[in-house]
Length: 152
Image 1 (cartoon, rainbow, N blue to C red):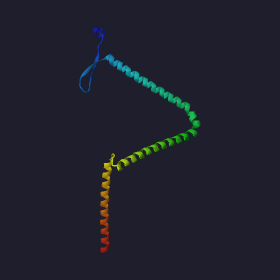
Image 2: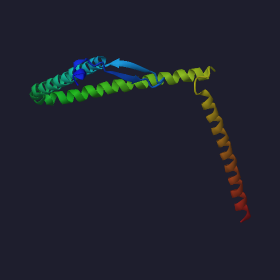
Image 3: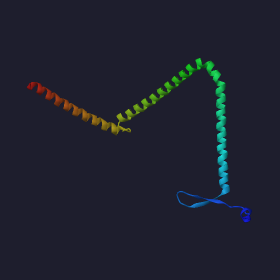
């Protein structure tokens, strides 16, 4: 028992790699350094999070009376700024979409075969064949209707 406490322990843990199954010895001191680093980083981030929360609460406490006093001016101003911003954003988006579509149409008309042209041709042929079928069915129906009224 005295020998057990008298000698320093060299405890090592094995790491098993998922791919190869090879093991590597890692001393306990290395694990302690990794744990201390993790605790230090986690504690620092937790402290930073707490300070941010405290600053937010203090800023909100200080700003609330100012917001209440100026709310008849601030609320319509915020709404106006939001509507202006969203209008300009939508306008820009529609402009980009229009330029893209016009560019695609130009490439399609000039025969450069832009992406999706084959699908458009297939849909056009399919629509034309369905329209022809409907025309034939309408003519058949018209012929049946005319011959039906002449027989009675």
